[in-house]
Structure formats: C-alpha cells, structure tokens
Figure 1: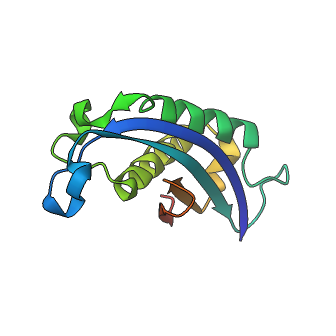
Figure 2: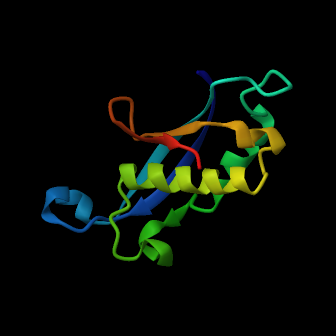
Length: 133
C-alpha cells in the first residue's frame, strides 16, 4: 500500500455537553495540526498516489470552512459534541466528497483509503480512517 501525506492546521472554539468533559464544558479553543494520508495499492499513471499540490490546496480549502469558527454556532453540528474524533471524521467526509467531485484530479478516484489525524497536542491525537467509496 502506498501512502502520501499532507499537513495543515485548524484553529477553532467549541464547548462540550456532559459531565465527562469537566471544564471543557465551557467555551475553549483548540489548535489542531491536521495530517491527511491518502492510500492506494498501485500508483497512478503518473507514478503518484495523488497530486500533492491538489491534495494540499483541497485540505486547506476544507479546513478554511471551519477555521477561526466557534463550532457551537455551526448549524450542521447542532447538538453534537465536536470532539477531536468527531472532527477527524467530518474532515474525512469532506475530503471524500472533494475526491468524488474530481477536485484532486481524475486519477484520485483510484485512491482506496484515507486517514485523517487531528493532533491536539504533542501527547494527544485522534484519527479516522476508512476505505473510500
């Protein structure tokens, strides 16, 4: 399996519901380093996993939709705890949609899987990985 990774970052504010979250029930901020890994069994006709420039640009665009936002105010997230795990899957789904729409070029449809990791700090992170449809 071949893998290509790109990295960017995301700065958000949010709060959580539920006693398990302790002081994080109050509004707080988070800065995530976002690592995205594209996977495929065979390289495309150009010898690539995916075009790194298009992958980087698309990740930056997708993150800009959430960057510097209070996620408590995003209607699509109403009633949800926007945990690191939740956000990793949300970013996965947005990139999957971009791949299907052709934003990463025609050969990106040959990608088999994607892994999104949100690094919350140097000691804590969460990932979501799945096959692409």
